Image 1 (cartoon, protein in one colour):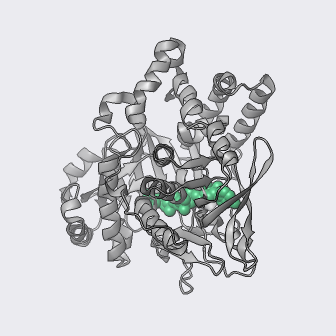
Image 2: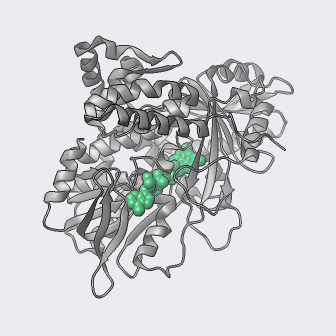
Length: 526
Ligand SMILES: Cc1cc2nc3c(=O)[nH]c(=O)nc-3n(C[C@H](O)[C@H](O)[C@H](O)COP(=O)(O)OP(=O)(O)OC[C@H]3O[C@@H](n4cnc5c(N)ncnc54)[C@H](O)[C@@H]3O)c2cc1C
């Protein structure tokens, strides 16, 4: 993906696009893949970087969702289990199977979770990854050596899958581009073009790097802006009733020593009725999450001190070594674009099913759902959008569509596994310039060649794009990421033909952002 080429294709186009998609998260980029692979002419506009919103801030599970099973949402669980399988098939370089252990401390937990997880196995049917099983105390300790041993009776193990959300997103953007879609980051939609009858006929957008205003016509406009959905709907009709009930979720990243094995821990019932995970992820331990209803939507939401304390306390109950604030390497927050039910007061109880709404202006808005079901959401959305704009009906092909970089044996690619078949090109950069193979920081597995590749092929424009979403440095270890910033800026500058002043500005901006991901300066519990 080359941004200048993408921009030129937008500027050169005289006739309306079949579809313009607003929003470069899982929903928007997934829809761009679906539309382009069916042969529709599609443009996607993202206000910041691809994945800057919720889609880089998830728990990173490709799962049916045991919690939704408990809520009795069988159809959502079955759909998600089907989609889990499709993703495992189409993106083996980005998705891996993961065992989850529910530690048991009470006698009733074996029958309760044992039976519940058998139902989960049954729902997965032929898409199952492995059978759930009751574990003895010894078997539980063999899988989770760091689990709290006091009162431990045993556990129950079941299987789901895990992925790297931002890497999947970039690979989906590349898949869409391979299929002919045009995608532009740093291009916020600022208004909608309306016909005399108030129907939406396109978008007004700003190209941030040049400051150019764009007027882009489309047969149908799709609003896939996640938590920002109602803002875009109000551009069409300021009186429209909101459909989103936003809720934020916090994750903490700890050292791998807190969970050194290959299995995750799941606590199906925290004291306040939530699900809590501790997951091995990219050589670290990811713990979370919370579910706090919020009013303000922002691209950089902040954790509440009580959310951080809640996660640390709950993790401390199940881990032998109790984590403290000083152990937190990174804290990140995402906003769930949950769709209002009109009844439920708690966002944890709101449905994760997706909703597609076509307003009287013809604007198609899609929200809700989960990362796991992004493909199905996209299929439904493009079906609706094509029907609404009377585009010729075309068969969906994404069930069998390999995601860019498809590779059957990613384990052979070492730290470049997530690039899949692109890892060859990343290694070529090292062959041309061996210094690009050196680690950028001793605490993280990233090298200079990945920075060059991110700029040349993945449309990274800023130091943050590289450190937050092309690599996951910011999310894994905010201090290390901050220390990498100057080197990353120095590698990017010649690639982007940028100046020393640009480097300085980028390093300052990134280091300021990274402070929000560190625990330093975070308010102490009162
Ligand atoms: C804490 C948490 C944990 C989660 N864990 C999981 C999980 O483990 N598994 C799972 O399956 N799901 C999970 N989810 C759900 C999943 O992450 C979301 O459903 C999904 O990422 C939403 O994607 P989206 O594209 O709809 O929204 P977003 O990713 O937020 O994308 C919307 C995009 O629209 C852009 N935008 C907004 N306004 C404009 C504009 N005017 N012009 C241009 N662009 C605009 C934004 O910048 C943003 O990039 C989790 C969610 C949260 C919050």
